[in-house]
Image 1 (cartoon, rainbow, N blue to C red):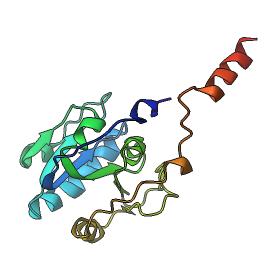
Image 2 (image 1 turned 30 degrees about the horizontal axis):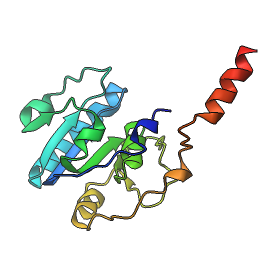
Image 3 (image 1 turned 90 degrees about the vertical axis):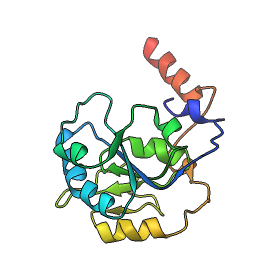
Image 4 (image 1 turned 90 degrees about the horizontal axis):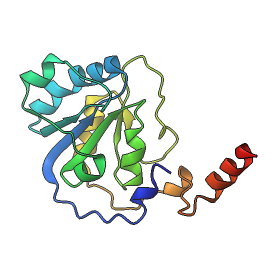
Length: 171
């Protein structure tokens, strides 16, 4: 049901060239590792950087103040119109939002961590802890191919399965 609101959404992007949005995780330690690793690197390659913290967590990270970072509070469906690239931690469900909205998020894997990404089995999604691989991804032309949403999502506006489930537990 979470994604049904995106079914007929038409996005007309006005993306900032060489821009990247980092999306924070509910796990503050995971978010801080990602910020500490990636902000100096992204700043050194002259990218416009945005950061969207998890709405339920406050992030206090010195790196956010040491670099020219825009903190974003808008919904992801609005932010995809602004940013060219997206990096999310491997546990974040926001990768699903981006994928459903036809973006190809980069899944950042902290070193020595298991890959818990909900997109771990999806082709054409970069999942890495390597800054060189991220930079190579930035240099490639962005694919305009439609994401294979039916591999992951079951979207039915009538909520037939949901209604059947609710009926089964109310009896």
